Amino acid sequence: MTIASALEMALAAVVLGMAMWTIVARETFAAAVGFVVYGLLLALVWVRLDAVDVALTEAAIGGGLSGVLLLGAAARLRASETRAAAERPGGIMRLGAAALSATVAAAFGASVLLLPDAAPTLAPAAAANAVATGLGNPVTNVLMAFRATDTLLEKVVLLLALVGVWSLAPDRLWGGYPGARHQADPLGTLAFLARLLPPVGIVVGIYVVWAGANYPGGAFPGGTILAAMWLLVIMAGLTDTPTISSRRLRLVLIAGPGVFLVVGLGGLCVGTAFLAYPVAYAKPLIIAIEIAMTLTIAATLGLLVAGAPERSAGR
Amino acid sequence: MSAATVFGLCGAALAGLGLYGLIVNPQPLRKIVAFNLLGSGVFIIFGIVARRGAAAGFGADPVPQALVITGMVVAFSATALAVALLLRLFQTAGSVTLDADSPANMGTDSVDA
Amino acid sequence: MSLALDIVTITAVSAGAFFFLAGTVGLLRFPDTLTRLHALTKADNVGLGLVVLGLLPQAGSLRGGFKLICVWLLVLAAGATVSQLIARAALASGASGQQGHSTVRAAGDEGPPT
Image (cartoon, rainbow over all chains, first blue to last red; front, side):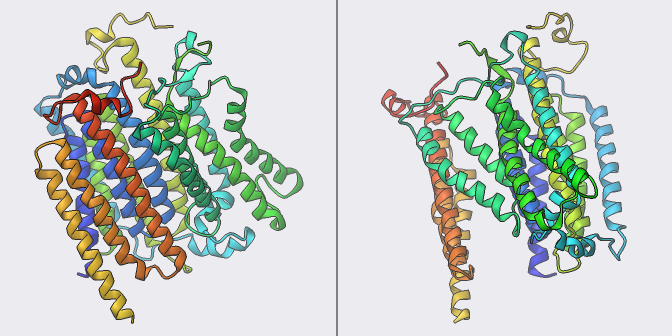
């Protein structure tokens, strides 16, 4: 038993402890806070599994943005706590649920322990084909070149979720401002942080996107950092959310999947297949797609957290 | 016990915990949190499959990692949509119960349009 | 030379870990919000600072060390702001058991949405 495996077991135990606390905590707000801590600890687990890109994405999206979303919702739903708590299921239901969960967990555990020893892997194939793009980060290669269709479709899924959130607005508020207007003392602490941090955050976000070509990073963590800076400025009341009918906003939202689709169709017309990059232009094309993707991801994630329109456009 | 096995079992336990929380917690927001726990447990199992596929100079197989990144973003967008639905339900019905027989869920056909 | 650097790393990171432990014990044992925030700042500022100081010899390049220091400064900024906001909210809601003086609120920030 080396020190490394002892630390890993300790980390796994702490992660399980946090997950258990999130399930059994009394208040929903406490459960949401526990979920944020759980997300950040999970990022450490990902680093131990040699998946640094995934760790960055988990810390940014799982810990950061999901946490903001859930904390905001928990604060707004505080009035419904007692009513919901009265509906706790009885002992038989809990026993049944516990038995089912234990069975599912045992099945997953057994499948983990029974994984074949000569693990099948696509890493040699990924390494062999890396010359097609000239990028140094294998995960970016997979995301942007080898499985680019998945990434394109994921962009569309993000857009669909946003349209779904927007469509929940009452008819008279369509085209209005998402979320409530945040007020903060313009000389106070939050406004100070919202003036201090975004320049640094924007640089860090752009760096993460740029470095994702050869080092861990990429459009997803970078776009999330940019979205977080935008949300910080909104929450400090220094700016307001754009109206959802704003043409510029909609152009930014479709820029990512749009550029991706255009490049893909170009591959069909000029090259051999949909999303085939000509080897000479692969790297500039991928970087152009990533820039458009980052803007779209930042805008979409920020608006998903901001929510459905709550104030009408003609204020 | 290698890192992959330890974290794999941890991921299996997380999936079980998430499922239990999803069934047992009556407050829908906590069901959403438990659903996210379930999802992250499954993602960890993807991660250990990636770790075990380390070859060709990489620390882990990059393909499952890319799948997990895509999955995390999609799971977040699903969570955001679910939370928006929940907040709208609270706004229209005044409570968040999913129980069909409760008075809040009967006779709320007049949606705030 | 590398042995000396390793000794510096181990000492500094252990000292940082001690401050983290002290901060966590404070978080769990102190009676109210304000005192718990006070304990947490020790973990944030001194604890993380010592850990970063201990990792600087292992950074391998000037850029790596600079990035570590930037991480520490960002955590300081975020931690200080959040502590202020939580403390004002606790004072205003009376959770701290102390009187919420109006002068403290007036100099502060996010009030109820008007």
